[in-house]
Image (cartoon, rainbow, N blue to C red; front, side, top):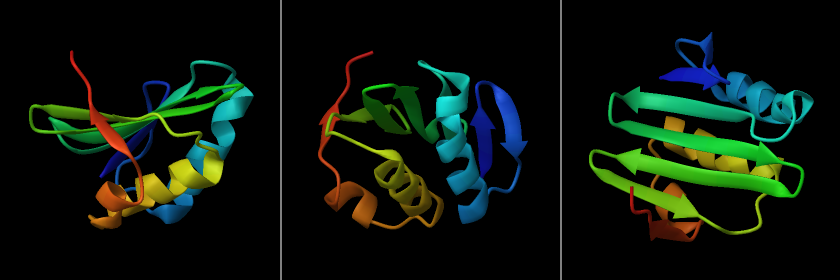
Length: 101
């Protein structure tokens, strides 16, 4: 899976260490910095950083879901690693709502 930070590819075959470094580094870029982990063209997980927390979304095919819990770096890293590992806990440990787009 490919990992991008602010539209720059940081890992073509991302692993947990890449994810940890990318997410923990978002604050250095300031508000609205983002990371995306892409599985396929229409399947990805993404986060956006703001001083008051993180936003989190994932897309599978035509379905987009958002998590509006209070999220910190560790939560986002966990979600990205679950996505990387195709771990079903991504769907059960976070509260997801459909997003209209």
